[in-house]
Image 1 (cartoon, rainbow, N blue to C red):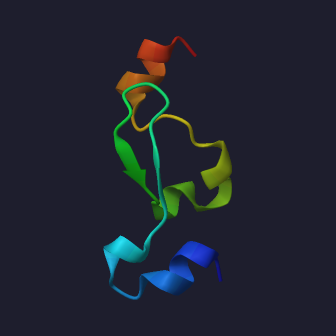
Image 2: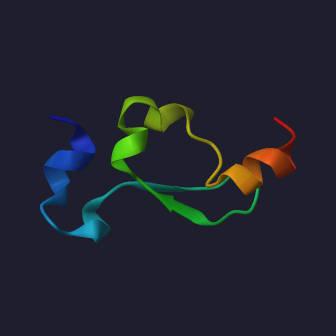
Length: 53
């Protein structure tokens, strides 16, 4: 079981977060990002396009 999921138990504040590399907004861990959380750098498709990559 992943580190994020172990601490979750219904408490969203227990999930890890990090800032978006483009807008600086806090990104909270999502199940869809579980496999590549370390590689996630931007919070949205819009930020990815704005970044140019």
